[in-house]
Length: 209
Image 1 (tube, one colour):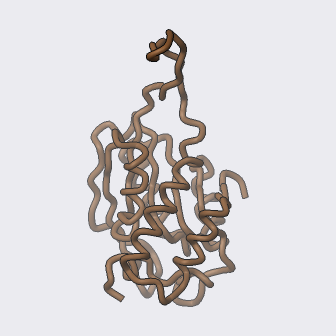
Image 2 (tube, one colour):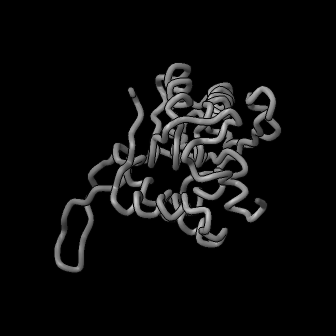
């Protein structure tokens, strides 16, 4: 599928298996989500522009490589997306953080917006949306539509698990958005939950199941 990258590192596969286990505690679930997000962040940021600078080590003068000044915004979709932010901020401490609040209408499965707070210069930033689950694609399309209305042009999204039907919906609506996931699962069921999935990520993160 175009613009979809499955990040299949053995460490990610191992930690994702632990996430799926229904007996994993909320504490361990939070730590695993943070760790997987950090590992996936390497792949999401692989093509960030860099530039060469002159530096001096304790031994001699040399050349070094640094990021070329491309600003980044990390935008979690509330509330489950919050669980992925800390792992990414550990690697990109200068990134600004926005928030998008969406909930899914349980009857129509369509997203309903209730909160949006973004950096004022969102149009000049690489925007990384964090959302553990991409199921029907409705919420993700809603989040991307919202970002684009605020001027965002360079958008990536990062997920733990995705349903193939949802991926198709999002890639069709937004072919310019790069999507990264740790797994493409079998499908989503009649209630919109991903199968085999890992349950409700928000409930498992915050102990509200």
